Structures are given as structure tokens and as C-alpha cells.
Amino acid sequence: METPDKYFLKEPRQNAREVDENGNVLLENIIHLDDKVFPEAKQYFAISWYNKTMMSCIGSHIHDTAEFVGFIGSDPEHPQELYGKVLFWLNGQWITIEKSAIIYIPAGMPHCPYIVQEVEKPILHFSGCPNSHYTMKASIDIVDGVGDVNKFVSYKPRPFMPGKETDPSLLRKAVWLDSSIIPGAPYIEFAWFLKPREPKPPTHVHDFDEIVGFIGSNPDDPGDLGATLNFNYDGEVVRTDRSVVVYIPAGVHHCPFLIEDMKRPILSFSGGDGNRY
Image (tube, rainbow, N blue to C red):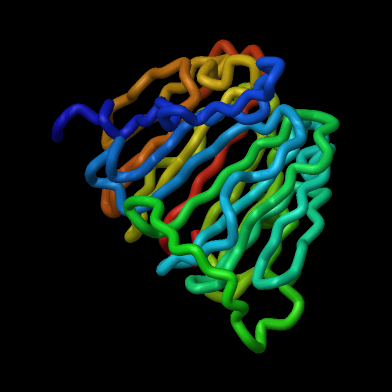
């Protein structure tokens, strides 16, 4: 097999930083995935920090595929708390988000703008879709018969399987989405690593393309992982000290991984175009 380094993506989207008139950073992209940065990609994903209040510059639009959009608080000791407020426009209704959340947006449903209205602590924002790149079409045409759009929001962490609970001093789950929560939704979940733990999970494989991410918790230096990641990718261990998204095509064996020299908590996530993990 060719070297796996190309599957470890560490660069932000170009020009993905917004500042105010005083030079204060409002938004800073951490990592960006699409077929421009990785030609084999079948998924789009981007994750950023919001440090200050602001309104998104994107107006109401639709996609040909479903999308997920989320906001996660940056306090790993209280992973469900957003420590801020976001207003998100979906199908003609405003959703008020004050907890870590993932919003599932069915294909063809108009959404945005959103307003980051309060920021007590920096907020992590992400979006993704089962498409190799991000495309949209301006639209305000409401989908009839939808009802209350709050049903498209998940605030739940994925529960531990019986007998497989993890010490909360090592790991705390933040928020999770799949089709068992919202019919048709893809799988994605987020959790905070607070301290290193033994190598996990065991080597395994999926029948869908997966992305796995490890994001450092310093918004002033978002590319710094604050630790060293050792990730087993198809039998070869790749080491990095940068925030990273690992792209894992269907059928590729991967894991376990080990985090060493950990200086700060790390936000970890995994997701894919499958509806369940």
C-alpha cells in the first residue's frame, strides 16, 4: 500500500479567518476536507472556532444532499454546555441553541443564516455532507408539512454500551447523531479526551468511508494538537502533533490509536456516510 500520510489532513481552508475592525479574530478555520484537498474524498467536512459574536455571511440556501451542522462548547468538563447562544434559521423557523448540538438538514430544506449571539467561551462549529465538495443554491422556498424544526436537532451524547463505560476523568462524550435519533441522518459523534488512555479501539473495518478527527483545544493556535497522536492506519503507525482529520476509505483496517504527551484536552470525532456505527 502507498504511504498513508495523504489520508491525514491537517490544513485549514484558505482565507478561512474572519477578523473585526480592531483585528480581533472572530472565526478561524481548523481543518477542511473536500476533493480539492483530497481528490478521493466522498465527504465534505469543515471545523472552525468562534471566538466572538458574529452573523454568518451565508444567506438562505439548499443542497442536493443532506447536511449536518453543529456547535460544541469548548469546556471538556461540561461537554453538553455551549456557554453561548446561536440562532439558526431552518425552513422558515429560528432555532435557539444553548447546548452542544448537531442539526440534521434534509436535502432541499432551506437553511441559514445563523447568528452566534453570545460567546462566554469559544465555540467549535462544524458542518459536513456526503458529497465530495460543498455546493449550494440560494433558496427561501419553505418545505411544506415539516412542522417544528427542533426535531432535526440532537443534543444527546452517544450512550456507552453496557460493560464498556469509560472513566469520566479520561473521556466525556459531547453530542451524537445517527438515524436512530433522526431518521435518515448520517452517523457522527464527538467526545473529549481529558487524559491519555490505553490504545483503543481494536483494529476494525467499515463498509462505508469514515472520517476520524483529533482537534486541539487552543483556539489561539488551532493547528496545535497539544499532544502526539499515534494512529494505526492499515498496519502502519502514523504520528502527528497537529490537529488532524483522518480519511478512511471503506475496507481499510484502522486503529488502535494512542495519544501521548498530552498537554490539553482533545476533541475527537468520527463519522461516515453510513446511518449507524
